[in-house]
Amino acid sequence: MGEVPIFTSKAHVFVIDPVTKKSWIPSSRSAVAVNFFFDSARRSYRIISVDGTKAIINSTVTPDMVFTKTSAKFGQWADVRANTVYGLGFATDVLLSKFTEHFEDIRERATDLSDQKEIRATTNGEVETDDSDTRSAKKEELQPDDEMLSSASDDSRSTNQSIQELKSLKISHDRLKLALAQSTANSKKWETELQALKNTNARLTTALQESMSNVDQWHRQLTLYKEENEQFKKKIKELENDKNKGAELNDRVADLKREMEKLHKENSEKSQECNMLQQRIGVLTVVEKQHNECSARHQKAYDENFRLKERISGLEDRLNDTQRDRVRRQTEAQQLLGQLASHLTDITEVTQKLQSVL
Image 1 (cartoon, rainbow, N blue to C red):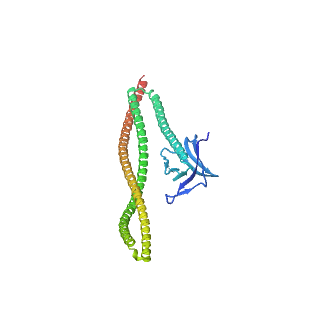
Image 2: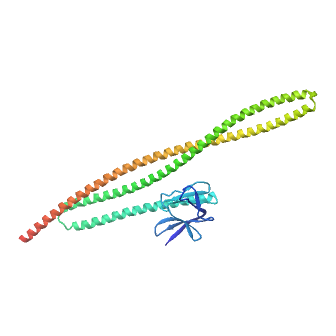
Image 3: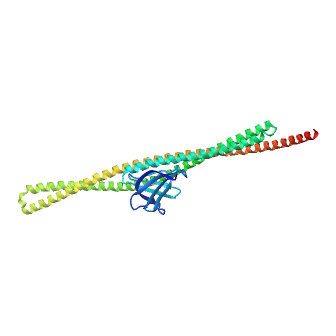
């Protein structure tokens, strides 16, 4: 049947710089079609995008993939198999939201397919085990000792149950390892974000301290300007009262007025600068709140990582116990089979002697 298209959207395609791992390299000259396909032959989902005759995206969706929105119109996901990170830039946030919904839906379908494959593999193992048990039972029905056959059959069934339990534990162990790896990756990412926020917070704190020192200096200058202004006002009043000074005094008054206007202008500018500094203080408060939230998220991820490690340790202990029990049961089964063969040999000799006597 081939590949069946499921969803199509248009976006600018980018890949992470393989050297710096920080900047993006555009893969398409303009917005191109990004398609979701279902491969019925391989029973897998793929994301494919073609620019002209060149395939710029060929990513198989796996259950552990995560699509992350980094801005209102940009998202990214990591492809471990391709050893790269793809980025998509959309024209609107609506297109990004639709792509995210379809990505999560396809990822859930891929998870279901993976679970079905594991169940099918386990079921095939059980069917093969049951067939071998049936064939061995039919052969053993031809032998005379029923009690020994029943004992051997019970040991064989218990061994099969141990094998099934061992497979189930291995599957759980692998899933927990995957969850631990994902949690570790998220923890590293949050540590990087936390460090970046700490650096930003330090720079903003330094800037705030400098701004506060400048504000204090401006307040002192403003106070001096106000005192000078009051002195000038007093002088103006004195000069206005003294009309005998003539034109020279009038020029002096005009100069003083111009200086007063200049001081008023500087005073208004300093007031605006004070308002801007207060706004920057508000921004610093928001940044500090984000820093605290990120610290809480990092601690939560660390605790979850520790719990997963403890669960994995418990499962590994159970797995070791199951393997030891399996070895012991196999040894007992081999001993019983050896005893059964010895008894069968004795019965065969007795039968031959009876035939020779008869």
